[in-house]
Image 1 (cartoon, rainbow, N blue to C red):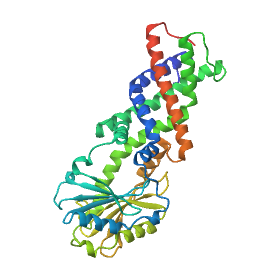
Image 2: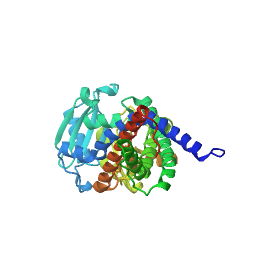
Image 3: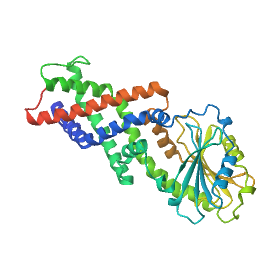
Length: 375
């Protein structure tokens, strides 16, 4: 901003801060309010389910035995996918009435992977329903607006970062005149202005991290979908015509396929498996999605195509570097990689940000009702 006097620069930064903040405040308040329960999503869902976490992954039931239970319960139906839960001893199996049946007709069987007991059956009509936490998660991620909602929140995150940078630029001259942490009490407006500034500067580093990772999360979704459409589908298409379907009794055991992939890709855990017969997988293959086995790498996915005849790995689609970088930002956004102490810190900072947003809005309204404040 060369050529501007200090007073002109301050007025310009003040205008940028005011209007960038106003444009995103309502959305940010919604994101902060929905983000608070999402910080503790694992704990809330564990209380709802009241089933203890898996302490020894090797002790869970044989997935092939659970697949056989599903086939006996619904003979003639097609097993579409298997999902292994990271947090609780669940194994969920999705079935469709026939190969040509619509994905909307898929119903699910949830088993306790410790003893093979059927816990719950989810009808096809209920599969798309969102529980309370899923609804909050969708509201936080897309405002329930899908792709368009995600783009809107990406713009909100960008405006938030602009507001943070301009806020620091405004606070710097004030900080040179007053000791850090000063809260004047000459009036309610002055008191709230100083509190707004203090909380804002105290949380600015965290807010930058959350704002930037929120932006990265919104960018990740369309980029991941594009990569899946181009690279993963291209990998699958290259193996689509080289074999015929294999009867379940002749397939390579799923448990061994999982172990083989996890040994070839150390530091990963297979979570989702698309079965032979799925619309998305070539005949005679499993598609195993392996993710990192730590909190920071849990979203680093690698799809692995495994031959269902002999268990050899037919292909691996490595996630590109830019998606790996974006995926690393996801745990940072919710602070769910450092256990309960870090989650509590995230919650306190989230509440402080709500105060900053609310006080900033109140100050703007008060300023329009009165003469401009000079501090």
